[in-house]
Length: 183
Image 1 (tube, rainbow, N blue to C red):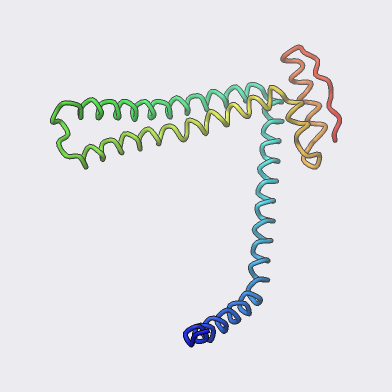
Image 2 (image 1 turned 90 degrees about the vertical axis):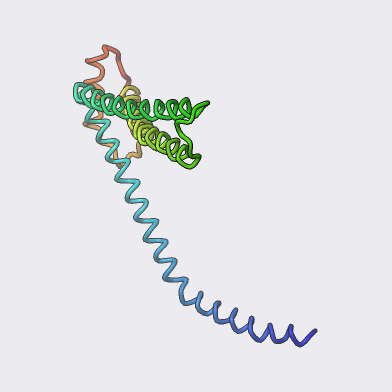
């Protein structure tokens, strides 16, 4: 073993011991922070499930309200779709203008125009996917009400409202929906 090895050990070993001691004192604080974060995340997820359940029950009891809500989401999706269309047209025009002409002489400028077209398209596509998935999820949960209600944890369920919603859905569709027992 060389002298440099022992000199390195004199530097590294005390540093490792110091870091180990610091970690022993810090780890309870970090663990408490992680526990609080996990509790907050669980509460947020619980609130989200409860809100969605109450929204599905409300729209099952009020089908006209569901229709109005879906029409509103459709109008918003059309607006997002038009923004997507503007972005795509922008990209097509920039592509055609850059082929065989000196309309966009600077290469960096053409990248700017492509980026602007993509950014406009992205501004439209993100809300469009969010709106359409939200509408489809809510509509499917109302249409397959019993399957959805069976998937909800029992501590969130309100059996009286579920029975009223089933009666309302039966009166609208004319089908008989067998009642689901809570799990």
